[in-house]
Length: 263
Image (cartoon, one colour):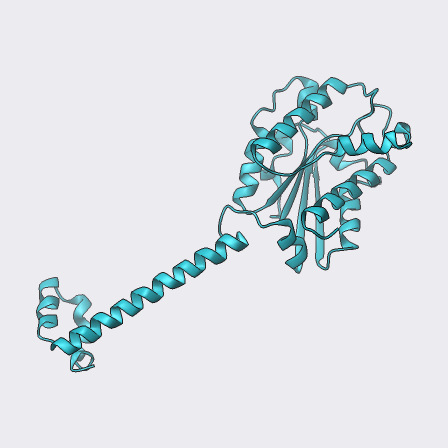
């Protein structure tokens, strides 16, 4: 490398020298050494650019460190541990000692997915969308299931913007989000409110381009096939029996597995 890297005073102290002195020392180098120095600098710069480019590709594919959520296939088919948070109202929380759809979801996924699966139930019995925000989660997750806003419509509290904000917040964390519609009986006492909630949920799913698991349509199909409504719903036509929870949890699990290409 000529005399350039043999000059310890230049090699170790050039960063401390004034710019003019640095230039003066550089000009004293022979042309061959200058060219070698320039080539080395070019190779270093090229290497740094290549590493940054590769890192960008890796982050874009995995979603790590970015606002991009990983796909269901990457999560359920390629992870050792999977955490799923279920955010919702009393439909999600269930009654103490009763089967819930999150518990069924874990059981059904564990039959197919080769991973350690944790399903957290963040259902809030008061039910308002403000009580079910993702900010109340105490554990990050790979997948979030959102099923709420009925209580807001039932009490006349406008939930506009709440689902959107939660979808954006979770997606920014790299979480894969699914929305679920409310199944309900034809004679449900709060039919208008649950219908409005489902319309809002469907709109957000479309606007945010995320998958809607239409549990209401699924339940109607099961009922049309001969299943009795009273076997699936409590007296209010909205809260579920254990059979209803089993059906809902299985339906959501099948939706996730289908999205992952694992069904």
